[in-house]
Length: 212
Image (cartoon, rainbow, N blue to C red):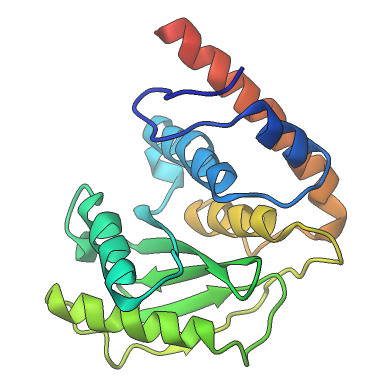
């Protein structure tokens, strides 16, 4: 029902993605990508005054240094302007064995921020990823070598479920919008948030079908 490309999106949701999203299963990268396309980019186009200038650089791909560099090349090639013209760059990271966290590049503040729903400042893969990104940015004439890595508060934390992908989406939404203060959500909100996402995705799909 949801397979295929919608309005030049690279992917859309399968029925299985919808079912797992609704019944609180683990969220895959396709859910995050679809959320960004339909929940952030389209509303930003319609109401630009309530959004900061942001872009998402995609999720981290595990692999050797060559594959990571290819990922960075792909992510930054997708930007519709120079990186220093944005306020925020988001990178949803697949860290550890099976966990999503959000890296935020504050271009104007010259800082890296990490929002992790299972916060553990001892995670070695996140600082390693940031160091790889710094080296890549230097090759693109952005000197981020001295930009600090911070773990800001507030940072809502998840419970025992598989909600890290949903938390990552909510972090992006709240940080991108000018009209949302702090991060006003918690684990208790997750069933409602999941249901709201499902309803939004279904509407977005049928709206796209009508336009085409």
